[in-house]
Length: 271
Image 1: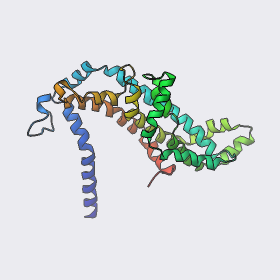
Image 2: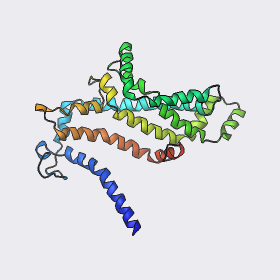
Image 3: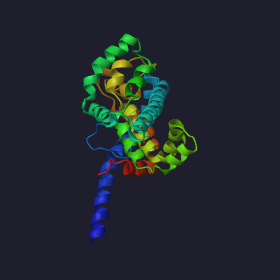
Image 4: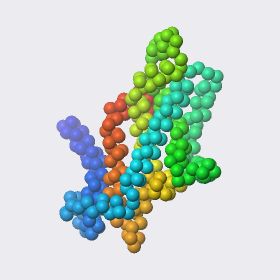
């Protein structure tokens, strides 16, 4: 009996989580006149792809999608490299003041991101980077959370491999590249998912520095859709944009799901 109750609760939770996504897809496949009806229709009748066609007419979907993909991938790679090198220095290399510097590094996580928007924008404007990829990527390359996550993973690795490598004449960079990184793939995959999701869904910062369509990302473009003709939001077009925005996140998560779970377990962020 208890097992039946547990499965029923799990099924209810699954339905609760999946239903909004299914409704989003359903709305994107409806005509405008069938959206705000007195009796909601979960299954579109008639089913139409006109909202996707309207979306393609209103904005350069291909270019904006490429912008989001490029910024998310390039930013994630840069963030992983910098966080991995910093985590290696904080976990495996002994130097004076290391723990104190690490605490200061973690203290930056207490500063709300919104507080940094104006000073960062002033700096970006002085550099002439407004409406460029640099403005979207460079400010997010340093991640205190990513450094903490990878440091916890590196500390869990045995030191025997490193000691053997040092005896054979390897330097710190060789150990980092050939031993630490291959053994930390689950944690790296976890950080890759977090980084990709954060950059892909970022709205406030791109809203400040990337207003041109040549560098605009999907969240900013999706927000612009919510002011349709005659100030009427065409929710089928908005949902079509939301579907295009959500699909890459699902693909990335499903692709790295196994490593993501292992990384959460081994990096000390569970519970």
